[in-house]
Image (cartoon, rainbow, N blue to C red; front, side, top):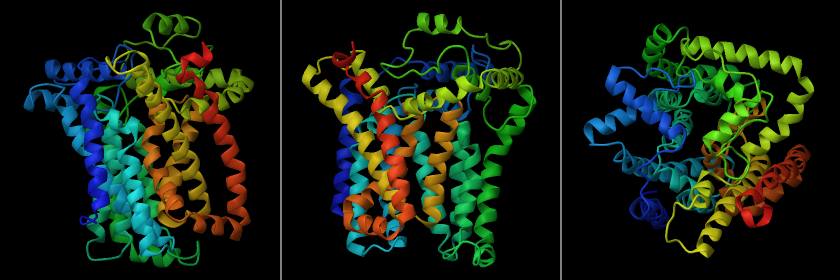
Length: 466
C-alpha cells in the first residue's frame, strides 16, 4: 500500500485541498454548534466542568475537552484545526485499506481491488465538504477519523490471527472515542460486534463456529468500548441529573423535529440561518422544558413532550418523514452555506458556482453509486457495519430531523461500494443479473434516493429559486 504512487498522489491532493481554505480564508469565528463547543470549553477552563448550554441540553464531551487541550498546549483553539487536517489525511489510507479488503472478500481480482482502493482514496481526498470540515470546529472530521479505523480493525480482527484480540480492542477504543464525540454512536458497538461475529459462510449453520473462533476479539471490543466511555458516563450521570452515556441531546433534537413548526434544520436554502428567525419559529410551538433543571432531567422532559405530540399528531408525524429524509439527503452542505454567506472573499463568482455544483454532485454520485454497488455486491461483515450504520442514522433522521452534516460521516462508507462499481462495473451488473432480490433493492431505493436528493438540490443555487 505504501508503495502505491496513486495513494501518495491522493494524500498530496488532499493536503492541498484542505490547506488552501486554512491559509487563504482562515475561520477564527464560530457558527452555531461551533460556538456551543467553544462556550463549553470556556466553562471547563473556568469551572472545571462543562456545565450546560443555554438550551438546557448537554453535548458530548469529546470536542469541548479537545478544544481545552488545544488552548492549553497549542496556544489557542484555532491550532487544533491543523491537527484535524492531519487526521483527515490519515482517513485516506485507512479507506484505501478498507476498500482493498472488502473487494477481496467480495471476490475481485488483485488488480480490481487495487484499482478500487485508488478510487476510494481519491474520492475521499477530493471530497470538498470533507476537506472543508477539517478546518472548522465541527466534529465530523474527528468522527470520520475514528469510525473508519474501527471498521478496518473489525475486518482485521476477523482474520483469526494472534493479534485478533488487539484489533478487536482497537475497534472498541475507536468506537468509544466516537461515542464521546457524538452520542448517536452509542449503538454502534453492538452493531460492530455482530459484524465481528458474522459467519464467513451461511447465516445460521456457522454461527456457533464463528462465536468460538472470534470470542476473544469480541470480548476485547466490548471491554474497550465500555472502559473508554464508562469513566465519563459515571461522572456525568452523578453530575447532570441522571444516567447518561455521553450526552443529553435526544430531547432537544426531538423538540426541533416534532413540534408545531416544521422539522428545523440549518442548511442553506431550507434552514434557519438567523437567530431572530430561529426564535420566531420557536414561539410557534411548545416551549422547551425547564432550562435550569439538570440537563438529563430537562432532556427527559422534552422526550416525553415530543412523544405526547407524536401521539396527538400521528398523521403529521408520518407526513413529515419524507421531509426529514430530504433534509438528511440535501446535497448542499454547510460548505455551500459558507460560500453563499460570502466568506470566501475574492473568489470569482464563476468558481463559487462550480464549487457549489461540485459539492452537490459529489454527494449525489457517492450516495447513488454507493447504494447501487452496495446492494449489488455488499455482503458479510462490512455490509453489516456500513449498511447498518447508514440505516440506523437514516432511521434516526426519519424520527427526528436531518441535516447534511449528519450524513457526511456516512459518505466514506458509501465510497467503498462506489469505488468497487467504478473499478469493476461489469461485476456489479453481473451480480444484479444473478440476484433478483439485489436487483429489486436497487430498483426500489435508487428512485427514492433521486427524489430525496432532488428535493432541496436547487436551494444551493439562489438564481433558480429566488
